[in-house]
Image (cartoon, rainbow, N blue to C red; front, top):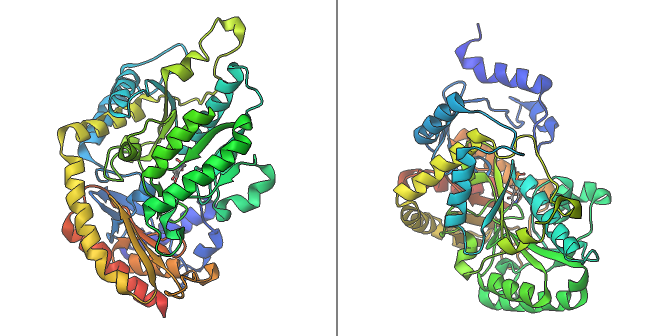
Length: 458
Ligand SMILES: Cc1ncc(COP(=O)(O)O)c(C=O)c1O
């Protein structure tokens, strides 16, 4: 029998013997107990909290990679899942369908921006991006425009790590090593307000970046299938935020130059930015909208690509025309995942989620306010339920800390010692909690982050 006080260590040792974790230099864990990074076995979740094998609790300030909306082990989603598991766990999705997928497609069409009437399911965020890229390319091919083979992506963007999704991503950490394997996107400068000129407002940055995008399209529209963006917040790129005017300008340019607009709302969809979908803040409908993460409330992997009847019709022809869209995953439209998504969307229907989030977001903003004066904080920014603190070596010049310093990691380790899961992106400490947090829990996250920042600056 393992001594209860050693349960974490025992499970971590078994894990490390065989498991290779994502986004991890496994050597970081080799020093566990000697100043390294712990491998924490979580055995239970409860609301916004995660509980380890020794009963220690961690407030999930990042919604477990931005997936969780309504708390861990949410009873309503769990009940829907249990019921579905007893009814139908899975069925091939070619030639067969099932009520949860049908209902979910109807509901997604109802709640997404107008004109998105067709739903293609896949099973994670990166797969949704692959679908959108292939579908856009294939649309143009079916229209007699096989010369359109390229994509425009924003600097600092992140769309996933399968080869296609990574191709249109621009975060060096993930992309650099694999660059020889990737498609070459055309990079448009991000409207990221942090990178604006001194004195420039976010709206002015957006206007300038729209003009630069126009210039790119003038050169490249003929060979471009689509422009792909993360609406309003470039999450993995450091929670960089921009003005909705950019999306409105992008929509107009895509129409004018006959290229598609792909909105990757995988991280920002389902209420994160204050509206159900970020595109709503610019009153635009993209040609493709990719959804995942919060779609199942953070319970199971599932993704969906929504597109227009117009796009769909470019593929709709006699079999012999060879125009069908070809992309399949074994678990496409999995009934369990669809049921979890339906239960998640039912919570949005039955409870004033966005209204409650507005109050929580305002509280989070107020609590972060004092950090603006910190000598190593260049910016505190927020869009709805996403807030970020940019740490710099020099406030006046905004000179960043060298990545090797791993200041963010120090904040992470401090958080774990003080019942908070904060997982900074480099030098950006951010907050993206599940919507079930209360004000006291937000206070806890901010207090721990603030003391963590102090310690990390030494
Ligand atoms: C905007 C965005 N797109 C795509 C992805 C990829 O999703 P997944 O990790 O499910 O493949 C992510 C993941 O963080 C993301 O933030």
